[in-house]
Length: 340
Length: 184
Image (cartoon, rainbow over all chains, first blue to last red; front, side, top):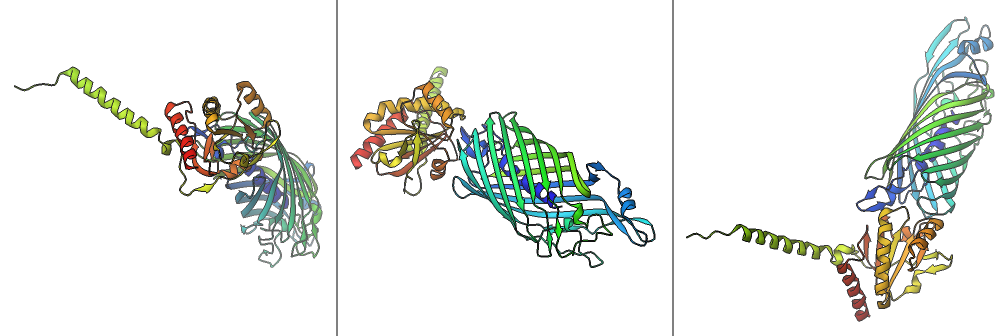
């Protein structure tokens, strides 16, 4: 689930920085700066607020790059006299409130507060060989808060630049619960917990090149994960994005993004979350992956305001996982952003 | 015998009334309060240090003691493109009376250079590359024109385009220049 958290965070960063739709929309007879921020230009003139809703569903299980059914995974791993469970469906929803504030004309602070709701259905073969479906209790609550500082290393204009390089450093804080337990008193799967229990460092770089009305961006993002307070350490993650936006008119931007993510294997130092013999998802060997997504985007600038709406749909193009993993099938992102 | 007001006299009265009303409105539109938003408290205009088109560092403090129109604009702002030639004319007429016009472009240098060259503007043009000018003057839209008096105080701000060739506006700026000389 950490890869999903990273996906969500990167999307939030890109969202708040790319969601402002270009408009020569006038405030009265003048050109409002707040409403004239172009897609990808970033940096709210005063304060930017973004409310984002994210929906992810996961059903497909992969072994490497191949798809494999849940029954096949069970049959390969179940031992007589034991049990083995496999997820059949996972739905993750996240509501994030992000705020961006320019401390100086070149330095901006960004904060993200997520609220998460996770649901999982599972299939289990018990010691008697019977296969049963069961539903995990819904987990919901505040996730890990992230604070990021973004510095404009170079730009050729404060608004509507043709080139811009932005560097960022941040911290993801262990504010979300990571010690939820099930009815049996065992830790719920690490990937389903609301938080990581760890302080993690974030590094980002974004380069923008604009040929108005076309804007291109390349972003790199690295999350250095540390061991959580319950002994679980998510693998470091590296993501790369290629973003394109076309300003179709004063109110609509359309775009196509390519998003790649490489995640390293997790480590369960204290073994609290691992049930290797009985659960597919409770096995650090079944973590770490490389995925590529294609993302069409539509942004709509709300006329005569400094607000904009964005809809994104992410579809996986390529997924290569360690062991067996349930992967993202569809992902939707909806965000409302307002500049003040 | 009742006298009736002829139709032609009625028309004349209507026309005269319309003329008086429009003159009254015209006078209101061109008062200093309409041209510039006067700040509630007098504050010192923030000093700026930016680079001009020859890449030389320029400071606003260099123009201390002058009446300055600080004009924020961008080449992608259609209102700005119409207004700058008017500012050029205003400046040509009043520069000898102490008016300084500085156009601060929140835009990339290449676009600004091309536009300035094509229109042959001669007033100073500075590049606000990182938006420090926008931030210092709380610029919310383009064009925005700040009026700085000889005392260095921010005396008014105009959000949106103005017709700088309008005779009323010209006389008003002239009066500000003359008043500031007297007071100083």
